[in-house]
Length: 352
Image 1 (cartoon, one colour):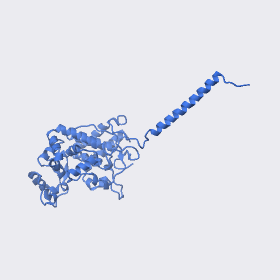
Image 2 (tube, one colour; image 1 turned 90 degrees about the horizontal axis):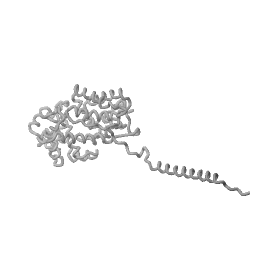
Image 3 (tube, rainbow, N blue to C red; image 1 turned 60 degrees about the horizontal axis):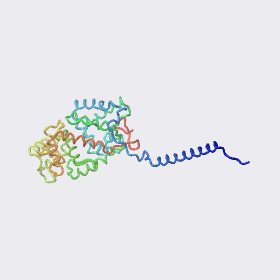
Image 4 (spheres, one colour; image 1 turned 90 degrees about the vertical axis):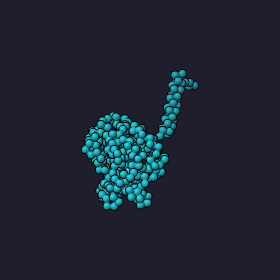
C-alpha cells in the first residue's frame, strides 16, 4: 500500500522547515553583526560631558566651590597655585591628576611632583585638592576622580580672582603613571623661544591662539627670581640685561633679585600692575615691555603672536572668551578612560 501525506502533514512539515531556515538565517546575521561591531578595546572613548555626574553626584560643583571659596579667603595663593598645578598636570601625561601622586616611602622612583620643574608648586594647591576630595568623598564615595576635582578647582579659583566662569566638562579618570623624568620635556621653559612654545603646544593639540590666551593666566601669580635672573644681568650670555625690559621694572627687579646671594624665596608678580586680579592687564604690560619672563615678553616681540596680544590687550571680554575656550581644550588633553589605563582614587596622592 502506498503511503501519501495528508495536506495537514505537508503544511506542518513545510512550516517547520521554514522556521528552521529563518532561525539559521537570523543566527548568521547576528553572528556577522557581532563580528563587525567594535569591541570594548577598540571602541572610541566617550567624550567628556557636563552631565557626567548628574545622577551620581549632582552637587559636585557646589561641594568643590565651598572649599575653593574658603581656601581663596584664607590663603589667596591657592588661586594661582592651583591654576598652575592644573596646567602642569595636563601637559604631562594628560589631565589625569598624576601630578598629585606622592612617592612611596623608600622608593627610588621619583614621581612628577618630585621633578625640578614642579618643586615650586605651592603646597596650598595640593591642600585645596585634598580638602575638596575629602568633602566630595564624604558625600559621593568612590564616584568622582581627582582629575575632575582639579579641573573644577582651577576654574573656581579663576572666577574667584575676577576671571570668567565657564562650565567644566567631566568624566576624567586618574592616571596610573607618574614619572618625574617625563616632566621636563613636556613643560615650557622660562626662556623658551616662541618657536619652541608653538611646537610644544601643537603637540598637545593647542593652537597659537590657545598659547597666547593661556599665557594670560600670568595675570595673577608670582615667579621666583631664578626664572628671570638671566634677563636682569646676563641676557643670552651678553653680560647685559635684556634690552627689551622696561628700565624702571629692571631697576625694581634687581633690587629684589641680586645677581648672587639673593634669597631663593623671593618672588615677583607676573602682572606688576594688577597682580591679584584676573584681568587682561597682562597683555597691556607686554605692550609696555613689562613682561616678567622672557617667554612672556616674547609673545609681543614675535610677529606671529604680537597681533593676538594686541587684540586681547584691548578687550577683556575677548580675553575671557578665548581663555575659557582654551582651558576647555587643555582640560581634554590625554583624558584617560577604562580600568586598564586609569583609576578613580580615594586618596589623590596614592595609587589604588
